[in-house]
Length: 222
Image (tube, helix red, strand yellow):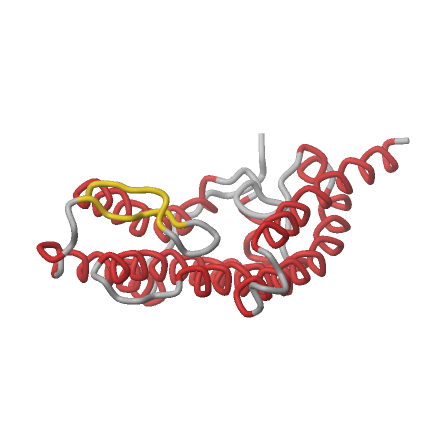
């Protein structure tokens, strides 16, 4: 039995604002629906060229569902988390994360719509820039996160040992910030920093802390 107390999340003006941000591209898409091509480009290569397509109806339904679900799921997830009491220790960071994720997804939604309307949007500039900035901010605050099942380096070893969690996230923070800087470099200096290198660095920013958490857990057990 856990001593965590399940609390019903209180709705605030921040939640209303996030829903407005999430709804904005949906309302825009509905307004320009008749102008969108029947088959939309929805996925793009590292050079910005379209390489994935979807009907505009299914795209609007899927992206609308994702956009609205994200802030709501992140709102209610802590109340369902066995380690829910820990959220109070990093609530400010978690609220910031909700905002950033909602803004990022809404931005991708808007960019996809505008591109399909014929606007010259350099997707291979804006998306890496957004991902890099997101990674940098998360890395800057990562050390504040406390054990939970919703966000962070959630390995069996960090969740089993709070000290392993603390050490892993303190180590991971600078790595994520560095990975974010590299990915921003993909956006600003594509001829110097190729996209594949940025993707590799992002993957390493996840894999290295995962391995580190296992090593630290074994050290503490031995």
